[in-house]
Length: 173
Image (tube, rainbow, N blue to C red; front, top):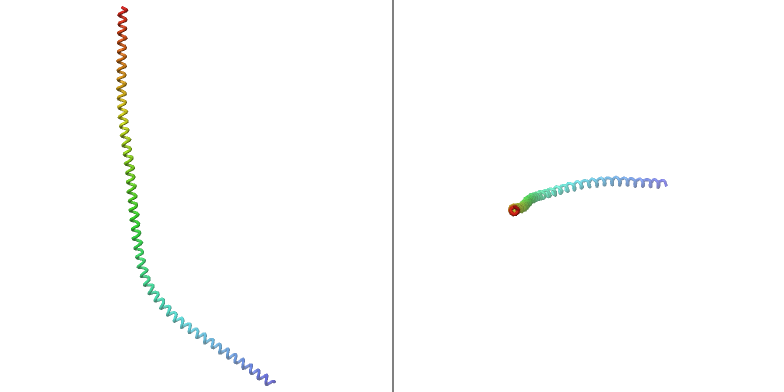
């Protein structure tokens, strides 16, 4: 039994040593695997950096071409916009000039109308003034004529009265 116990202890110690060796080997394998993974990651990183650098170079070349195309298109767009603005400005100016011409024409027509109406009114006033003066002259003539007739009639009447008076005085004498 003692031998059996010693044997069992030795076996257990051997298993424990084997487990420790396995653990040490496993740790070494883990370290080696980790180092291999790091080296592979570094290689992948270098390769991906190279690929990324080449891709960036291609993109930059394409961007440079795109930039040149973009700049050309931008300049064309600016020139087109400038031409459109010039055209809009000239159209606005033409419309303004046409509107100003129309306003001037209307103003002149209104001024002409008022001048014509004023002239007609002045002419009518002149005619009415002439007619009034003529009526006044005719009225004065008629008045003078009536006064003259009245005086003549009064003188005739007075003559007849004086003649009757003389006749009556003759008869009475």
